[in-house]
Image (cartoon, rainbow, N blue to C red; front, side, top):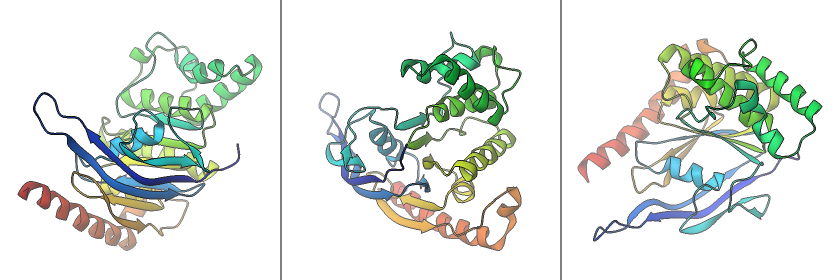
Length: 262
């Protein structure tokens, strides 16, 4: 696939109220451009609309106003040009690891031999060799998310969309998954839009961090991450990392205080 530019222009989202409740404005007008090969993290306090924005980009939700385009083509529905990984474990429980990874390829009618080669490649890249015929219930949380990542990448999407994919994992597994994702990105330079509420995670993974305000969400800052690649865990101990963390923590704490005072 040729690389495409993602443009989010004036996107807002209002959810209707239940009964007599007033509608809820989740997203104020939001503009964002993601260039091919960028790794952009969306960071913000809980409930600020960052997952809503990601679902709109995925075509799983519709904006109340504004538009999302890939190289000028409107995004209205889910499509193979966008691969999604959720926080919750979303593997098909009736399919094995290999069958889960193969699912999208089979749906697209990819030839059997090519399916097998792609599945084998991503099983190896995500450290799942030996677990090809296991059911999701037989896997740890980290292994399930590795499988979900392999399933998304196997379809070779233009953009990888990740909605707090490591949020339910223990600290050690989460850090290992961050390193795995970063290793894959450094090798492939796939365009990534990554939602998180973890400041360290955003800095370690991204080359740009978009900070959202408290609800109703808006983009209040865009912070470039000029740390060198390749990165490993020792990057988190450097003065440059600490300075970025202090800046982003200040941005987030300001929004949390505003939300508490509202």
